[in-house]
Image (cartoon, rainbow, N blue to C red; front, side):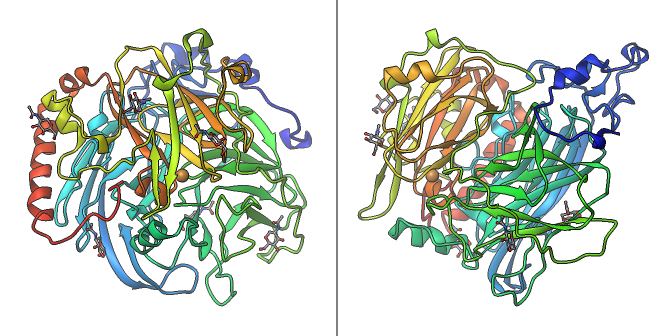
Length: 579
Ligand SMILES: *[C@@H]1O[C@H](CO)[C@@H](O)[C@H](O)[C@H]1NC(C)=O
Ligand SMILES: *[C@@H]1O[C@H](CO)[C@@H](O)[C@H](O)[C@H]1NC(C)=O
Ligand SMILES: *[C@@H]1O[C@H](CO)[C@@H](O)[C@H](O)[C@H]1NC(C)=O
Ligand SMILES: *[C@@H]1O[C@H](CO)[C@@H](O)[C@H](O)[C@H]1NC(C)=O
Ligand SMILES: *[C@@H]1O[C@H](CO)[C@@H](O)[C@H](O)[C@H]1NC(C)=O
Ligand SMILES: CC(=O)N[C@H]1CO[C@H](CO)[C@@H](O)[C@@H]1O
Ligand SMILES: [Cu+2]
């Protein structure tokens, strides 16, 4: 049994590749939709004939099936809440907090019908990390790729899952996801390490009693964000006073290897996760399968996902799972000083753990860049000349309001006139407030230096691509210099869709211009993007119009007309960037 060996060292996916991925009998079999019979607990590297962990999913995707979901977003006052305290207002998908999990297989096409039954707010649903190859119009970014859809209306999103792993969806209508409009996405596919039991998605997020709108207004006047009132694990926790709520309990089966899909759908907190007495083995970062990497704690910035395996190989008992916020307080602080859940072995009674364990080494709110993708990528740094054309400086105004700028501009989208309107009209007179960055060269790697004038670290997220994280400086390193180029990693660096910009430091990213559309690059702290911290990459937009079906175009236009008809007569006002 594999549990007789301890999981030290780094496993390589190649090990399992060598064991023969798909049995030869499968190779000439029928085209399977979904997992083939080779996808077993002892061989998760295989998926179906012709598809396995080594398949380049950016060029080859299984046929898949169509899966339809019907959701409704509703608004509730005086919600009882999961931690024993009443919350004045929430907005929920299908009355669930977090919203329903969207589960599908690699290659499937999903159709999501969403009814907006909110009282006043529009909404828009973004599918975080989904590549949307050729389907920028399905990206769900209001003011960019669509108008918000108004109360009483239903919108349908349709897109193909070319990647696999764990991700999430959330509203992109201002900070609305902070009111509860978010949920998990599981895309079943091959894995770099065998496992027995999939425990499913496990969101861990900051939780506030005031509404997201109230905190947006507060953070426009005060730089330091308020501490969270709690941190929820899989939607629950006891409250810090211990006067209500319930711990989340993860049940392990002794002797088995479990897959846990950690997701950080917070609005502000970037943290480390550790389990007393147990290592975790990382097998995926965001939607990128990585060679198994065993560690005692994992870091998750806002928006990031880390899929881990956990072996139930310790003495049967109850153990704490802890979340640790970096000591600086710059990556979030909570009125729950020691947020925790319980990891419980099924062979013993439920109980409160007694061993407090050891606090993990302080990450300083920096990402681990030790992860190596199974499907490799390589760039040539000869093609990277740092300069004004690829430098994006982050700056901050604090008077009269707190405003976050990239390249000297705070984004401020127009819900009534998305940037897509300009693309469709071929109108290149983009308002400065759209903060566009033009990328016209076809299929080349584009390089971006993001620099920081603020002491606050930022989780930087890109739509429509996984980026290569070529490097990130130490905290306080200042600007990127020509000499820093030598420190960048160009051979199979960590690849994902969110990475941390260190406080007063730099982050260098690369993505390939292979997906025409207009894609945001933004800080995923809700209060920062609300305050303007985003650019909009206009990637080969001259090719975009031809990609849009007439049905999608009609739906887009009809929705924008309905939105303007609603909002322009509502007496309501946009209070932030709109994102
Ligand atoms: C959004 O909804 C909230 C709660 O109903 C309301 O207070 C706010 O004014 C709305 N904002 C917009 C822009 O619709
Ligand atoms: C998370 O919560 C859901 C809904 O209550 C539950 O079905 C699932 O088993 C929980 N996940 C874990 C890992 O405990
Ligand atoms: C884990 O959480 C528990 C409960 O809050 C706490 O008693 C313990 O000290 C924490 N351990 C670590 C390592 O943070
Ligand atoms: C292009 O957009 C600008 C800014 O919205 C607008 O003033 C102008 O009329 C547009 N041009 C055309 C030809 O529609
Ligand atoms: C930053 O803004 C300046 C002035 O508008 C512009 O010339 C430059 O191209 C922008 N930088 C990028 C990376 O787009
Ligand atoms: C480009 C830029 O603004 N860089 C700044 C990053 O932060 C350091 C430390 O505050 C400054 O020295 C750099 O000028
Ligand atoms: Cu930020």
